[in-house]
Amino acid sequence: MNENSRFKIQGSKFKIRVPGFRVVNGAIILLLILSSTAYAHKVSIYAYAEDGMIHSEGYFADGTRSRNSRVEVFDARTGEKLLEGRTDNEGRFSFRIPRAASIRLVLHASMGHRNDYTLSEGEVKEALGIPEQETGQQEEPEGKPRSDAPPPPTPRSDTTPAAGAPSAEMEAMVERVMDRKLQPVITMLLKLQEEAGRPGTTEILGGIGYIIGLMGMAMYFKNRRKG
Amino acid sequence: MHISEGVLSAPALVTGALLAAGGVAAGLKKMDYERIPEVAVLSSAFFVASLIHVPIGPSSVHLVLNGLLGVLLGWMAFPAILVALALHAVLFQFGGLTSLGVNTVIMAAPAVTAYYLFNRPIRRGGHLLSTLAGFGSGAAGIALGAVLVAVALVSTGEEFTGVARLVLAAHLPVMVIEGIVTGFCVIFLKKVKPEVLEVGK
Image 1 (cartoon, each protein chain N blue to C red):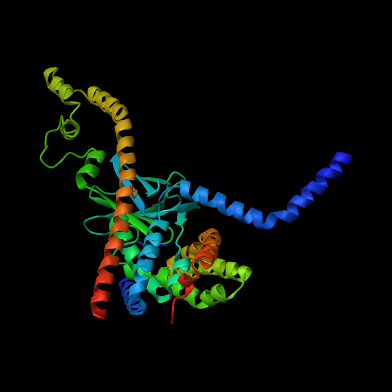
Image 2 (cartoon, rainbow over the protein chains, first blue to last red):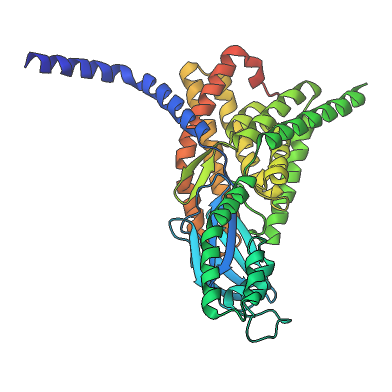
């Protein structure tokens, strides 16, 4: 009982003292949180085509995903709007390829942030399994775009013709293996691209340098007018 | 608060650019030789402040410091903010060069308003009044900026109305943070170097 009441008194005492203290503390904590979370304020979108689908990802310059943002999909050549959707909680938005053409995605994040990304016609067609115009053959239309994309599989595509006509099975298998092997590389590239969008020390110091330079110029001209 | 390139319509962009040009001209006229370094320092502060951000909901907001610039610089906040925003656009692709005018107005007009509303109470008032006025200038800088973003977005089409409301809601926390930061800065400056607050006519 006794202890309880003492606690109460201490509690109330503490409460009386608190206001100014808490504001200062709060401000310090807030500033700490603020300075630890890095840069923001530009939204980017990245997209790739695969297996008849287009996958897109929206993120801010600090790496946070742009959730529930509107994505508009256009035919890049004609400018015709094909469809629109919203990104999910991971900032992703996927849809079936609407047309075998170059496709432009426009991401509208909130508060006037916007960016776009264009997929080339070749990329889209490859994901749809449509051969490029030159490759008219029936048997190995799929092999062509794949063998000229990444260097690693070259030994493999060398062995395929030696073993005879590449069967569909073989092709599917190679594709699966490649997908698995390339997954980390793609993730890494995505990450690199994200990081490249972030402001670095060089830019920040450079910007301050510009301002100092402008200051010098302004002072020079004002001084001359005076004299 | 940076509006990206390609969001606003041409009339909105031109209006923004003209208003910004007017504000910058007024600011340059008031800027005398002795004040230039101060303008540059605050411009740098503004330039860096925008890189510190708070994630909120689907988007993120950052410190702006336009209220502080306004209280300390008055109309000179216009050139200071213009320079910093131009560098944001060029170096970081925050905002954009076509929307530079609009963005300058969005952040500098509230700064000038904060100057007219709060500079006098900060200089003349006691400790408490100065603190409150400092808080007010920081908060007002953000609030008016948010309203201007909303106006800019609404003027381009009906569909933006909802987004505009969101802008106001999203900036509420930053308003408080900016208010606190500006309050502390102002009080500190008043103690250490009160002449900084004398902007002149």
